[in-house]
Length: 130
Image 1 (cartoon, rainbow, N blue to C red):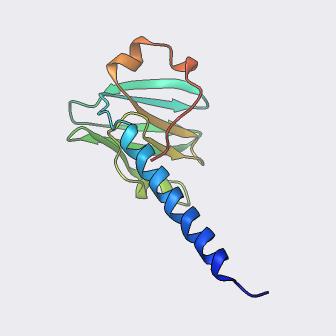
Image 2 (image 1 turned 135 degrees about the vertical axis):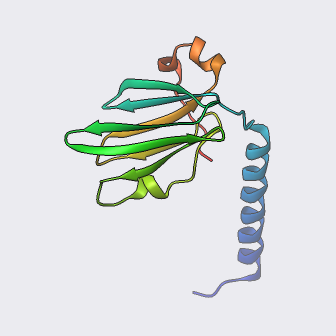
Image 3 (image 1 turned 30 degrees about the vertical axis):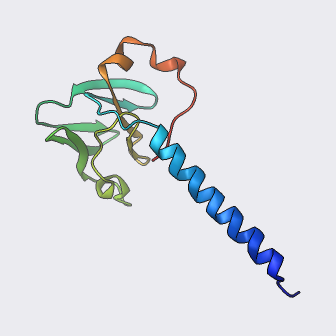
């Protein structure tokens, strides 16, 4: 099958349209700085920590552990004993909606703002992935 000139125009238009749409969406969504780190294991909130002061703590699950650090308003997993180490290599989080996940240890960390803390977190259906 031979690619025709019209096919190239259609592909080019769709590519430019999708990039423009993605750019517009990223500009519309605000990158609101969060101030609360919510840590969950097995869908239960185990800890809520403010991001404004530096801290370090150990979270254990079934004989395994994660060490979570908060430094300069950003949270990250500095050490874990899981095999894949994906959580350790994830970028530090500080904006509302950003997450760090460690599946083997069933750890889920998400950043919220104080305004979100006053509202029910269970009401939210959609998330914006960045």
